[in-house]
Every structure is written in structure tokens, then in C-alpha cells.
Length: 573
Image 1 (cartoon, one colour):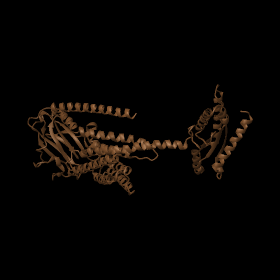
Image 2 (cartoon, one colour):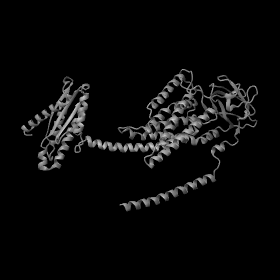
Image 3 (cartoon, helix red, strand yellow):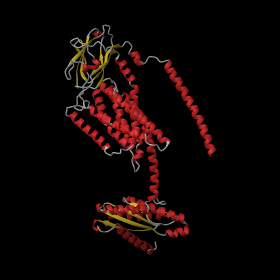
Image 4 (tube, helix red, strand yellow):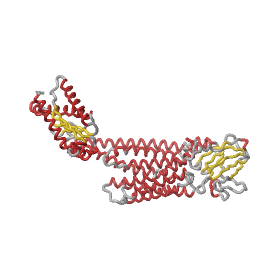
């Protein structure tokens, strides 16, 4: 067998090499052709003749205006209307548009004093004050050549970047396609992170089925989804699907609020904090921040965007805990090489995410970021891949241990022949009910004894005797389940059923009637290898018997069962 296995491994290794060579050949061939014969993309073709329009803007007094930093222009006062102007080219062609991105301003665009464009502003107290990041395409005509275009605006925040950038005159279709093309990788990365997050949550389900639950994958998945939603909003591409940039900005702010709690819960599940106060403090701060920011938002004092700094502070604290936890874990002695590999991966992932977060936060406060989540996307994807692989290994091991634990539990509490509970399970259940009996309306115990087991064993063999027990157990179990009772085998030919809750006496009577009918139905079938005869008796505990122990009820049921057994023998059955 060993020689055959080694031969198969060598053969498969050859197949692996052949397949790798095939993949490498096709990859080189396709990439080589793509590089050699690269032509103009549809966006390039549509953007031919595009005119840059960033420079040359001026204020009403004739002074130059840096429209990419409107908040830094001395004459621009928050909430007060202001205008910037530019002359359109004298050779303006038909079918072109003034294309630009706006940020944190309300505005209208006039051409020669005539209102040409005003963004749709949906009103609700749920929205932020700002339109957020918005792509705009103002139609122009050949007759507009040489005319003055005016952008009349006011900033909506006292602090924070306000701008008009990516200004050009060209094809609106070409600019839209170009925007999608330039952000295709970012958008795809966000969707990949979102998919991985959902996959991790689904993968956490097997671990949930275990007695000792570890939700590493769940928390990592929730973290991935929160960051993916934030990153998607920051690409500004969702505007093209909803035409509601205010909604996109709100989604970005809310997603940031949801990140710290799953992050710190993941760290606690993966590594554990020596100080148990860490998790409640971070989760409490995050919950308090959410409540305070929401109250400020809906009362109109400050919207979610204006209070972003608090989210950044809590995220900074959480990121510090992340780096501390990873570095501490990285310097622990590993138990084997596999675990050391995971430590290296985790260290790389955490450092990448930490540096990416720092870079993007600095870019945000410097006001130089068109995409505030550019580096975080890459860092988070590396982080999830590194940590997800390690957490997935733990989950698989937990599932394996859970299966083994379930098997051991079945051996300890299940009767090997009939599959019903054994004597140990019965005794433990009786002890549990003894503690709970004062809170229950009633408890009943039904005893069963299979007649003639020894006779069949001696005359037909133990295999037939086992068959008798199996048939008897099936009858007793089905009747017990019909009245919501639990069946146990407590001896060679003895079974017991426990019923608890409401109307236990009525349910016992129903069980006895059903039990007798099931036996009669079995015995009525011709050519059965044996007839089934089972003695039964029951006793009931209720609140009027407060001082009586359940063991006494059990003995009373046993006595009644033996009385029924004598009666059966006396009647010759």
C-alpha cells in the first residue's frame, strides 16, 4: 500500500507540474498580447479633445480663485453665497459638458447669467447637511462659446475641505466611463472584501454549533463588511446607481461607526485581553459615540460628517489595541512551524492595515485625498486573508473537536443498542428536575418492563433478544415523544419515560392508551418472530407533594409496573 501511495504521489506531482506549465504559458501569451497590442479604450476615444478647465477661475473682484481649495479662499465665508467665474473657449463644440466633482458645497451653475444646472437635493432630517462628493455633468452648446460660466456656491461646514476639482470640458459619457475605469480596481476590491466578509460569517456557523463557541470568523466578517461598505461609499461610484450623493455620504459615516466593536471583539476572541475591562470600555465608548452623534445629528446641532473626529479617535484606539495584540502574539513562542507561519502572516497583515489606516487618515486631514479609503482597502484585504486563514483553521479544528465531543457524549449518555438515553442520562435528568420541580406544574414517571426477554434469549438466541428490545424501544420511544416525554433504557429489559410540564396525568393516560394500541398493532401482524408484551406503571408528582422526592415517585411507578406485570402473567398474556 505504501509503495502504491508513493507512486500515486509522484504521478500527481507530474500532473501538477504539467498543469502549472500550461497556466504559465497561457498567462504569458495573453498578457504579452495585451501589452503589445494595447489600443485606445472607449473612455480614451470618447475623451479625445477634452479641455482641462482647472486653471483660470476668478472671483467677482477679479482675484484668482483656487477652486480645489474653496475653504482656503479668504473671501469665502461658511454658509454665505459666493461665486467663481471662467470664460468658456471660443471654439466650443456641440455635445460637450462641463464635468467636475464637488465636495461639501451647495451650488448652481449659470452660463451667461442663465441657470444651466442645479443638483437634485432630496430633503430629509436623516441626511447630512452636505451633498458629499458628487460628480456633475453640465450640458454646454456651441452657442455658449466665449460666454462666462459662473458657479454660485456656499460651503456647508466651517471646517473641512470644500472643493470643485477634476474640472474639464469634454464628453460626459467619456468622463463617466473614465471614472469607472480609474476606480474599477478599487470597486472590485471593495466587492471582494464584502464577499469575503459574508463568507467568513457563513463559515462561523459550524463553530456556533459547538458547546464552547468562538466567533472569530463572525467578528472578522462583520469588520470586513463594515470597512467594505465604507470603502464603497468613498469610491463615489454608488452615486451613479442612486443619484443620491447625500445617501452615499451618510452611508460612509455610519459604516465608520460600526467598525470598532467587531474589531475589538475579534481581538478578544483571537487573542484575549489580560485586562477584561478593555472590551467593555471600547464597546461602551463606541455605543456612547453612536448615541451622542445620533442625537446631535437629529437635533440639527452637528451632523454625522461634522463629528467624524470622534470616530477617528475610537478607531485609532482600536488600531492601537490591534497592533499591540498582534505584536505581543508575534513574540510568543510558537508550538510548531505551522503556527509560526500564521504568526508571520498575522504580523504582516496587521502592520499593513495599521500603516494603511494611518496614511489614509493623514491624507484626509491634509485635504489631499480624492479617495479617503485607497490604502485601507489594500491593507484590509491583506489583513483579512492573513487572519481569516488562521481563524478558519481554528474553526475547522473546533468543528473536529465538536464532532469528537458529540461522539463521546453519545457514548456517555446513549444506550448503545436502542439509541435512547441510558441510565446515566436518566439519573442526571432526574437530579435536574429535583432542583426545578417547584417551578414546574407536574412531573410524571412511567416505568416499562419487557416480558419474556430471558425466555427468548435462551430459546432463540441473543440476536432475537436484541431484536425484541429494539422493537420494544421503538414502541416506547414513539409513544413518549407523542406526549412530549423523554425515553431512557435503565436496565436490561427496563425502560422509563419522564414527562414534565402541564397536565402530566392526562398525558400519562394518553401515553398508556397509545402504548397499548401500538403493542396490539404490532402483535396483530402475522408471522412476527415473537409477540411483544410490556408491563407499565406510572406515578405523578405535583405541587401538593412538595416534600416528596422524585426518587420516591420513581419507586412508586416501579411498584405499579410490577403490579401490572403480575396481572399480565395471571391473565396468561
